[in-house]
Image (cartoon, rainbow, N blue to C red):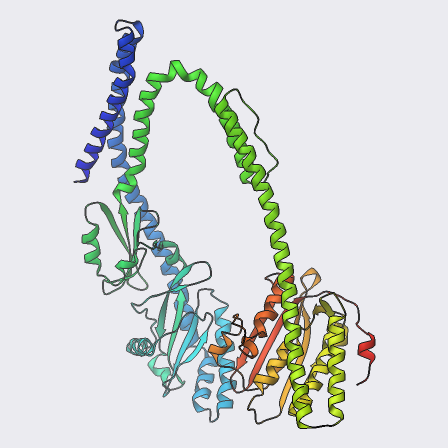
Length: 624
């Protein structure tokens, strides 16, 4: 069927060539049917062009045959190389897993974890387990995490390097049964999941292993499950487009499990299908090759599209057929004119286009001897000029937008703070009439005057801590001595600059939300440290509280921007704080939050180290 289609394509191409040839020869025959030119062209077509075309057809047939044969041999070698690479990685991960189940420290901590009497003991032991797993994670970047099922425990201990993988209870139960059927032997389940990252996705599989039977009673470890990524598999599997078509149209790639079903494939619709069904679907127009992966008893397979292999040859042959006819008909008549008068100016223009494509907008095309080429040159020059103007305008607009957004964030933070403080003063005025109102108003006036009196947005750390002391005083008047602020900052860091009002929203959220409903006294610790050396120094400022903390779903949402009207973190919080830092210093800096429900929250700011003046102004020297 495919051969018949190719014969029809060749026949159609021959008809087109004959029709165009006769279209060119007819005017010559009408002008002078006995001219030397027409006889010479007829002789040339019959005794030179026709044999050349026949030779091209024969060579095309043999080339297609050899391409298919050579490609099959090469792809079989490549497939074996991929299988070898996957096998090596599986063995490497197996060695790590085997080492883990024989690790005496892990066995000891597992036993201690089961025997722990209190949650505090389990928490400390789990931290030690995390250290053990982190040590093994350094050995291979392919490790996604570790799932540990202890003796007599239903809930597994999970240590994740990547938050995108979560095993279900059914998967964990199935893996545990597989591991306990093969004590001391690493097993690879016929299961694979796909996860998306920031730039691309990857397939994730797992291995399972249980300690040897003779060691099972001496340790609390029952089963170890290790999810990981196989990099050679990711190189082998090609992703599909939205329509489900192959990205290059040439081949489809499959990873087949022990049960004969497809575990991973560049054709996502084939995942889960039996390999016999796949082979029958590709039969005829595809070459189907397979090779085993010894460690896991999996199989790699590739379906190569024969038409995609021969398409370049067919395209080249069609081009050659046309080129032969064109050369025969027009070489003598148009050679000098074409190359000297047309192509050379075009090559110069293309070179200038490449220069523009590399970002140099200073080049201009010169006028030539043809009106058409002159119009192209004029259009090219006009286009380059416009692109240059638009590029400059975009740069200025972007810089202005960033400046205005930084300014907007600054003025969004300040009124937010001011409104909350004034609200606290209003509440105090209603509740009591004493000297606290005067002190509270004085503190607010100092903060407001000092914040709005300067045009710069970078203040020293000493100044920010001073502002923070005044704010904490105001909040203590409102809430009483229910919390304390502790400053853990070395005096050598007080001159380092940071954006103004960057710490107050973090302390405010700790007071309003972290300590809400807290029965114990609240403690807020502000600390600072400098890491790195030379030009790579970074200032780390942390605000830590012992409040009620946040659940994972709330913590994951604190960096998102929400509509106005929501409270706390959702209104200004970390979104504006981190956005302010990124816009001011770049994406290498920002803010991170870690929370432990029931124990507290830590927010850490990453800032560049920049020296600034000490703000020992009249406001800092004023007494309340």
